[in-house]
Amino acid sequence: MHQFDTWEPLLRLLRAEHAKRLAVPGGRVVGRIGRGSWSVPLTRRLPPRGRAAQLEDNRDQHDAVERVRDALIQDGVEAVTFAMETEPTGRTLLHLLGSSTAVEPGVGPHPGALILVEGALPEPWHRLPEPAPEAVPAVSADPAVLGQVLRERLPDAVGATEAEITAAETRLGIALPDELKALYRVTRAKWEDRRGDYDAAQRHSEAVRCELFGLDGVYVAEAVTRECPWRFAATETVDIRPDAAVQGLVGSPGWIVFGDNGGGDRLAVDLTPAPRGHTGQVILISHEESVGAELLADSLTDLMLDRRSAVPRAQEAQRPPAVAWVNGSSLRSVEDAAHPGLEVLSIGVVNGPPLGLAPLMGLPRLRTLAAHTGTLATPWEIGGLTGLEYLELGPREWRLLLDAEAVPRGLSAAAIKVGYGEDPLPVADLANELLALWGRPLIPRTVVEGDLGPPA
Image 1 (tube, one colour):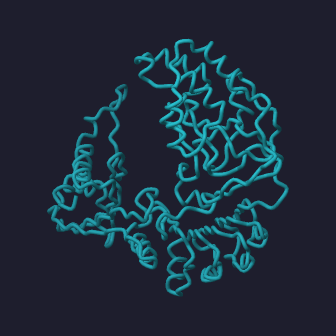
Image 2: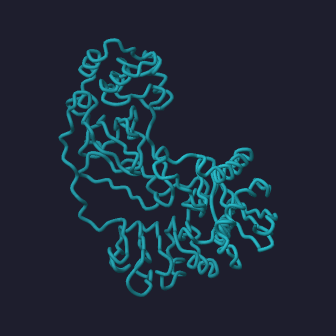
């Protein structure tokens, strides 16, 4: 990856297409190449009218990128950001930015969130379910009826043995509820039992109302199983309401996942319901959301009999929101957003002078602040927000905080808010300054030098 001839075919293509930009002193061409995707500023040639695009239409680009991708694979590297600059004589500098275990993937050539504390997770990922001692199984929960219905639908199914069920419970460290045991006693949902018959698999899914996992695929949907980049996870909040059926958590030690709806959403038996729910109710954990779950049925028996829950939805919260946006189309000031329950504040482009942060001082739950560059009147005020765990600012604001030694040291993660076209090299340098404050692994930066010769 660090050999000039690996990059030379690609660099020649980039020089030919971006000659004007590279002729400006300090002008660079930037891109990113990974094993599974690449973003390189080269114009794709369109096929003749009436013909579909073919590889040969852009063979030179494809081969040049593949040459680099092969080198990444050989070096065991997932992705690399590059910035090219060249002189009229052909002398060329190629700046390569590697990956750090303390940096999440970002958008385009820029780093994502910087993980300042190893293994740190946002506050919602630490929240556990609240006790609901009044919650009991639904009267409809009936393992005998469930088993009878499924045996009629799947007369040839192979059921799990008691030893297999016990082994699953031992692996999970939790006793499976009786309804779930009844389900697996009818069918163990192993692919080999269907002998490669896809039609049989379809009929099986229709019978059990989901793509049922085998016992070895059943898992507990604790918060750590619901991965989300820090930049987004830090803006999530947990909502546990007394009039809800499902606790609005990221995950729970009582959510036992047993299947999929065919679209990537997981079905689980919920053993930690909210006060208005039922122990053993069936919930849907969406792959498009990072917090909460949807109630599907009051029991597994109800799910198999297509009986939906009759529990009414929780009412909208009658309290100031825990997440607030200050910008030209939402709240207009920090004062309007500030209240004791505020957890997340995002400041976007505002119509007016930069904003002060004094109203945020002393708020007990504020943990996330993200501010668009140029929106803060006195960025060093952030040093007084000692409860922050995540901070996202533009390069100018980070520079001011670093120079004033006002970066909050209680942070668990941080991010640099930049536009796509911003030079990635100074951004990476700034990221490394922040990582160094916590002694975290830096973004490796290498310069490869070579000569392309004068342009033809």
